[in-house]
Image (tube, rainbow, N blue to C red; front, side, top):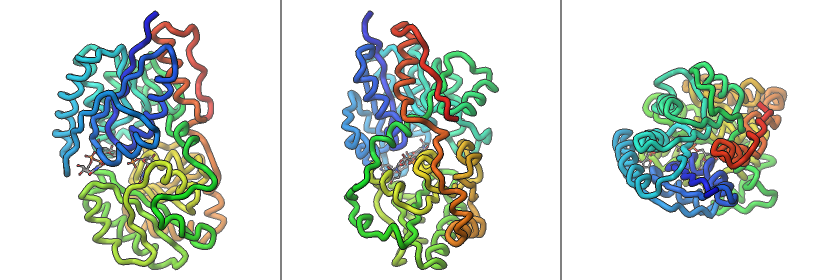
Length: 383
Ligand code: UD1
Ligand code: UDP
């Protein structure tokens, strides 16, 4: 039997972090011929991940432009991926999550009549506008995909509600596979300021904030709350690696510049981010990936959004929804900075998102689907 040609397609930082371990797993195994296409919807932030995982794409569409619109990303990806698929003719295309690259990758494959596997399938808020445009992207990919790799049981239940029940596998999230390769004890940061923070006597609060639905008033409220937190609690060192989006850069610097204990730094490489997270006191974020990683490292998370498609860690008690209003964000942070019991109740490690074997399960499921393996993979049982 000839090798199954599987092409991974991704373009942004989080997709790369979650697809790199899978692309590497596929390329190690004899059943597969692994191909990798990046759209480079992100450029620097994508290249940083490729470098850390030593992954070399076979195709690079290099589409990024400053302040790109959703239509420009989608149309450039769609046309670019079409060309790649006509040349490479893979047996299966794997896309990840819910970005514009993800949607365009699935649609281009459908137009070429190439089967699609969706990694990180079944996440839903059931609010079309939040996260925007991600909720619709993942629903549309769910409608196109032939194979669905769900991180958790709740994700699988969401698909079942949409009558998607065949080709569905419960695998855990590949981000936990990635996390197991990056966190080490004596890590030295390339961002030197992080080597000099006092992680024991000070309270290092790690912040990220970038989502499109938070542009405008929500982001201004979030930034106002962050500055109040730094002002009110002298033991707080606030570290915020700022996303390269000009919209985000502008608002973050406007509200947070010029404070001695607020550190606005460049985006961190993924190994730096994971090691900083392992050392910090508290995470405040609107990121999806951080909501999965921080609980695995035993760090409480305040989510700077109105809703989350990741309810598992909320149920486990390590993540709380803080919303996007100054007052509510400030008072939840104050509680975690001043009330030891409230902090201790949230600071325990939980792993509802994976056990580090998601990539193996996904590769096994693909091999089984194509008849190269007699058994389906065992399910992830931790959710
Ligand atoms: C995208 C995804 C979002 C994901 C996020 C992860 C869509 C619609 N959104 O949003 O789901 O959570 O990535 O970070 O797909 N830029 C650079 N260099 C980089 C990366 C970005 O300069 O390496 C700047 C560019 O000016 C670019 C802008 O950031 O135009 C925004 O990037 P874009 O991919 O459009 O949106 P994100 O907010 O990053
Ligand atoms: N991340 C990183 N450096 C940073 C900020 C985030 O490596 O400066 C990682 C983070 O650990 C997680 C992923 O990027 O794995 C999350 O990406 P992002 O927040 O951009 O997107 P989302 O997960 O919200 O889609």
